[in-house]
Image (cartoon, rainbow, N blue to C red; front, top):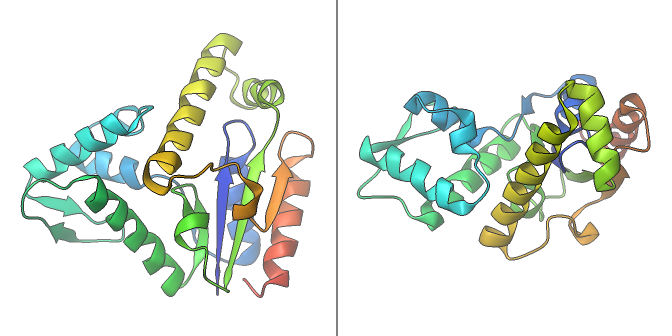
Length: 207
């Protein structure tokens, strides 16, 4: 079936485009919520799990280690001996992404999917981006929150995502070389962006 990975900066439409693409292609949608799923099982908030630097990533997985097992986002638990370090966190995330790709496939949002699955011929890697002020305007309109609050959230989110990729993969998540398709999600209607991604996925035999 294949897999589509979507890397999206805040306000570029990733949470809207991803599920729509999955629906059109008849694939499952897997969002960037691996830490959020873990957080739900630990009884902590998604905000705590997705704070804006890798220190909280380490802190979250220390909490997991304190329970003696690491919840597996696909199902079940992975027994641990001792506290998982950053390498263990990254390896578990990569394992989940590869299981998705090796299984029924799907549309994956975030978690550096384009880097983890970069060598797969049955994958399409997409980047949604746009100028910061345009992304801010789009987010304010889409989510209906005050501009300054949205700006702070955008800055924190962008910082988190960039820090994750730079920390674990030592590269810029916005670099076009990582993707087959790069779209300014602020310059086109969401439906048009979905059409572009679906057309590119089908051209690679996905869906």
